[in-house]
Image (cartoon, helix red, strand yellow):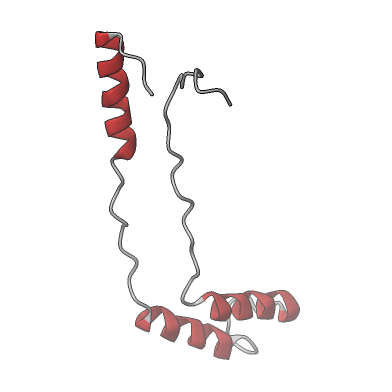
Length: 90
């Protein structure tokens, strides 16, 4: 890449959410029980896995929203300023 190349647009990609559910194991267990036994109301064979999921959900920490990054806002303002003043970005 040469040193004379110009950047036409600036953009930062948002980070993908890295979600590891607190009760994913219990949820998968209940779904597999439903698939294997056909007990969709969790009254017989799947009652234990259903209770384990409910207890896990009661004690799981609540997910809060991550603070939103404002880098794209500032890049947009910089691009507007550049267009107004006809200043090339480095």
